[in-house]
Length: 146
Image 1 (cartoon, helix red, strand yellow):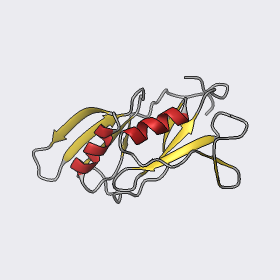
Image 2 (tube, helix red, strand yellow):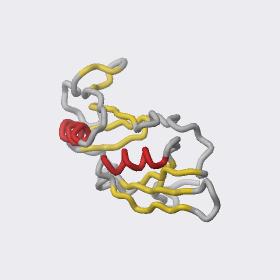
Image 3 (spheres, helix red, strand yellow):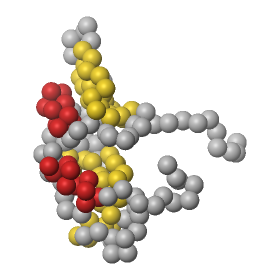
Image 4 (cartoon, one colour):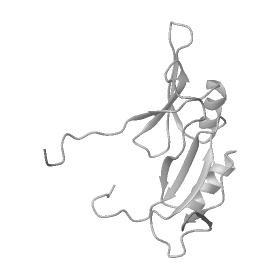
């Protein structure tokens, strides 16, 4: 089969946490929009959905929604147009964010020396240790425009 296929959009990613209220406070503190906090009629079921500013994809934290170990996710990626501003904003909201780095056979301190899109990063984690990666994209690759 060739061609593009049926349009599909990533809507939600489940992020495993050990303490829903602690994680909820963290993501609210980042300024992410809380879409829902639903507690089921059955004990041990809760869904809390957040959407990062400007994102079409949300995350869900909760109870009884995933068998994944809390804190086991790495590389949840957020793209930003200005990594320095994004890093400063997250720090001002209480997140512990790494220094800016680029990849050259491993993590190298500082932004990409050539200022290329897709090459500069910073990272942070939620209270359970789920790892988030900020990636600066100022110009999209052809065919990848927003």
